[in-house]
Length: 399
Image (tube, rainbow, N blue to C red; front, top):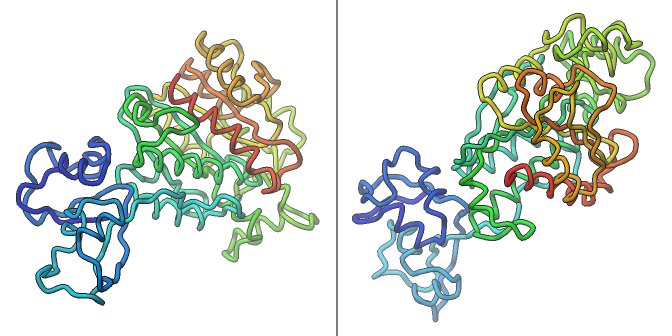
């Protein structure tokens, strides 16, 4: 919600007026140098966690009774209706009234394709302007690879989803995690009993919710109409009846077998020697723009830990070739405790994002395998998956 500053208003005053953490107001209006200084009259100010609604005045209502009914200060209503002459208002007139967002915007219980992701990011940015939304690059087909950042702490935590196309449910899970976190921040409510403002103050969270948007759209919506991609995927898919088994990017390269961490082992032992719906590691590591973007992000950001979200197996992997740091074990124990997922230190697999991150930076890295069954997992598993992942999400911030 946007308001226009009046004489004597400050971000601190708005934090009191709307019941919001001052830090979130400051982060939503980064051009304002101080939360306590008076604002320039007429300056447009973003109020996070709020929108406004129309209210038709009834015969017996006054500004005070309307404010009381809505559990706001009367000055909230005056602030968002500066164009009204309150000496002249009467029954039947329409006012704008603040409306606090207490429910999630994201609907994760549906096929979660790229367009859905973009719409959800746009809506979250509108309501929670303290988040930073950028692009770290583009997919093969030119879709921006969206990156969301929030938090003020020194610890830098990264999450990503949908490295694999038919694991698109991971994007829905991650976006709902973000939405829950944002909602609890602006409402001063705990998330699974944990206060969220301290997490915001101690950790900076980085999220790439959909690493492989071209592949996700292929699985959910069928072949693209654009040449040469339509012909390319039809040729790679051969005589398969659908694209539900497709894990790769649109060029048939498995993005999580594509990082320079013993890549040659995967290249030699994989049966797939040409672009395929799954498991083909490419002719060389890091040729694909999606993988390059993720490697570039890690190089720039110097993350303290990374969590790559996949399906399936109800377990997570956290070691690689003995290169993982000592603290990884304690983190893994906590992840296991809060999720009941099985902690697995080593698995016979190479060239994944987590593998490469541990190899390059000697910092904690984790691959989560959500749910159980055959990919793509059915949405009927969503609630169970989400509750187990939520514990890991929170632990990744407070550890």
